[in-house]
Image 1 (cartoon, rainbow, N blue to C red):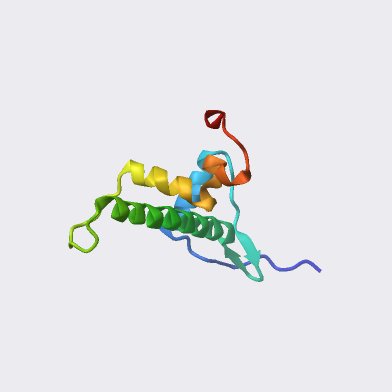
Image 2: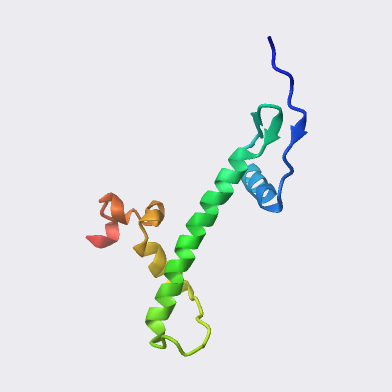
Length: 112
């Protein structure tokens, strides 16, 4: 027996449309998953949450770096995140190893 085709679609949010457009920009087509009688954007949601978590980790570490370098802990002044703070944050986070290879035990040519 063949199952009936899904009749309902979960609407796409702007975030999920962004993931779908970004994936299409690199030649990847993402299809909705069929859950019982429903089309759902499971893959797009998973990719968006992974991007969000990654960016949250990088920005949190960059904010900490900005606080360390300023020497002004609770002055009420806004912290400014500079590219150097992002660079230091990426170098310190294991989740960014795909950018640095630091935690993989590989030695770069500049280390020798």
